[in-house]
Image (tube, rainbow, N blue to C red):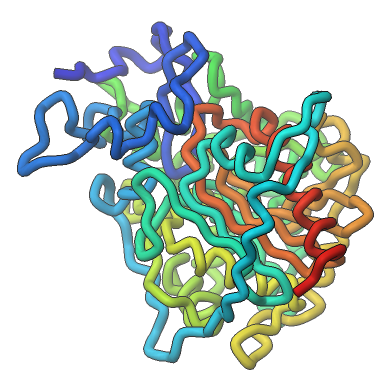
Length: 445
């Protein structure tokens, strides 16, 4: 039997605590190396097989086992079976077809990892990053699609912080329509946060994560604000005697201002919680309903998605989306086509163009993302500012939508890497993506 992990609010223990966006927190044993992709394959390990499974093979939310590696290789593809969620409807319209033109020449494409000298291949990069599923679109056609581990083509996988980019795009569309004022303060829309650090920040600063709010998102330091945030979002992991805020909106009101707004980018998921609250306050609709009406239905998704729900039935726009991989790709293709997809303009073209242009590289530079030199962050998207104009939606443990306008390429990936931060995955992701883009441009079909 696995005992509960948390005995007091800031206990230390022999595990590395790895944040998984607002949707969850993964516990990875602190003694790498981890078993590789093949050895940790959930089918090989037999997680949740049987009726019921053997006790040692059961994965649960209440004991935290669903957030430990290698159990995560199963649970990331089965989140709706473990935690509360709300449905994101695709509506009643027809599915938008993704034509197929699959290629057999992709697995062997060579690349050199960042910081390395020995060549690797596209296929090897998938195992290096514990890929669960990947789809590549070139000029709107599926040229490559693979699934591994517990994920099947008709399954759903948690997107973690890629979720942020969906709601950042919705917010940008509402701004373009005049329904939200990007220059207005948070307090204008959320008077409950008037006396918090967010009160005098603008909506634009929330979208670009450049507020001066005091919040440290350090996943290994028990003194980090992250530990309090964790307890708010996941009551089944709260310590005995917990007396903190009961839901995330109450928690946001406790955060105070540390520095001037609009100066420096710092990645902090609380910004997207504020954004989701603003969206609901302005539209009168919860995030799942907005996502359904604004993106999921119009783009002709092939299946409903789901969004995690926290205490007080507050939905999680910062990291709670689960969906099919091909629908991930459809969203990326819509963005590549400047918001036009499935025979309609789903978001204003100016919104997609503005996102692609990016935010302030100067504000971004101080954050220290060594694998993203010259990058920026804008409307909850990561912009590379490379020669192809690539930009990406990123989620920990390997989730991502990568859009390369010059190569007319979209890559959608789900993964369950034991390494949470993309800094550990970028060396075998970004150069592999760049090599594939060059290959598709040089040998189009």
